[in-house]
Amino acid sequence: MGSVRAADAQAWASRTSCEVDFREVVNAVRYLVRSGCGWRMLPIHFGPWQTVYGWFRELARRFLFQTIHDVALMLDRERAGREASPTAGVIDSQSDRSIYRGFRTARRTNGRGWPNLTL
Image 1 (spheres, rainbow, N blue to C red):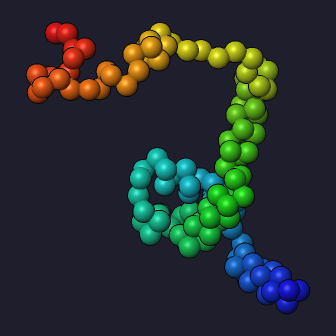
Image 2: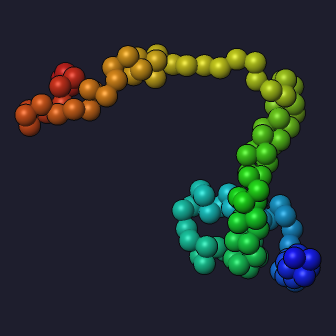
């Protein structure tokens, strides 16, 4: 069992031996989400797509994206002079009304259109 862990550690060390700016990895993931492009179409200034993909898989496996998001949000709120964590939430009237209608709003009636549609 100890040799398996040593082999894993050695593989991890060889995979991460090239120098990569972690900020560029995060920027590359943000670029991918925003543009919708594939991994292989990632611009070269972010680094090799295999490296970015490897870091993405590692961060996703450890559920670190939510932590990174939460920390960045708290820092932005503090920089803007507000409390680090929000103290209130907002629900608009449209989302509130949709709770009471239930599943029947999307049901069709004999091909005559949507039942709640008024023109």
